Length: 365
Image 1: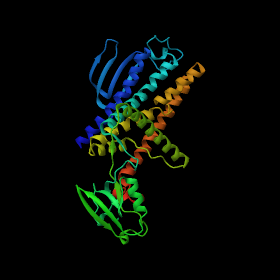
Image 2: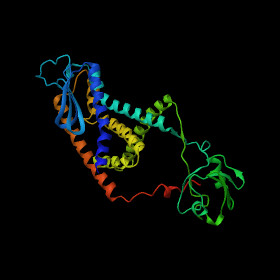
Image 3: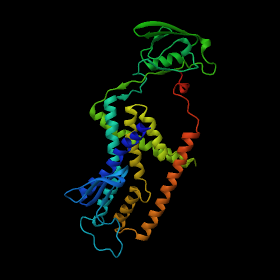
Image 4: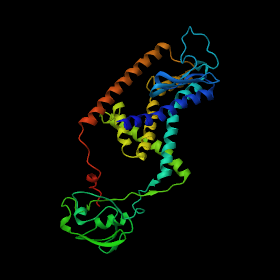
């Protein structure tokens, strides 16, 4: 339990800090004064005021945080002219940059983490021509298991034909007309294994029940950096396409709320360091993307306001902004409630999916 709690704090802390740091950097670059830069909420545990007047704080509840610029975000008609360092005194593009830069920094964090993982581990090889004919998994209920094939076996020939890679191996299995005579390299020794024609399932006559062993290919630092950026694009596109498909099919989208996120972090903590680090990058993408949604009170909603100011030369009225903020708040509350309901339903009432081994069926090998 303690490990899971620490996992949640460690996973979410850098995402929050980098998001608020993005806002802070944008303030510094645009000349907006910053009154407070706080990590967490609740009681102030530590604070220190900088020479530029920013009060840096660490608070008791280590979730969330905020950057408070100087002055109001939107002025009432009776308000005095803002000082040059106040938020409202800045041009629309400076204010736009400030509100979106938190999300952009989440993408920067994700790209760096993705890139570092890829550089450290390598990139998975997907080309079957480049994959050796080494078994990575043997499925239950298929002829490979009773025939005696094992994980890490290398099938070097099928019915006397050499199988130098996974593509040639799968083609040989699909082309079989009877028994399969396999030449297997196992721990430096050659083993002959015969899989009888009668051992194959009648409805899946070309499925031996094996999966390829994964291979990681080393990449250069520039390649890893580019692939880190690509991963951000890939996961953002996948999420948006999934949402669009759900709405197009009039299906409820599959969202993860606070309960689901904590559950995912809990699982990743116990599944290895690489998975945990990967999850931090994935959550950072999700936070960045979600904050850019054009919902009032989110960064994306404020961005729309300042784009409107740039196009029209004036801000919407305070009455309009207040109504929009209220609508945005209701939308967020409904989203959290719906996502939490989905979390509970998925975690406690959905049957467990089939194992990876049970899913090796339709690939013809």
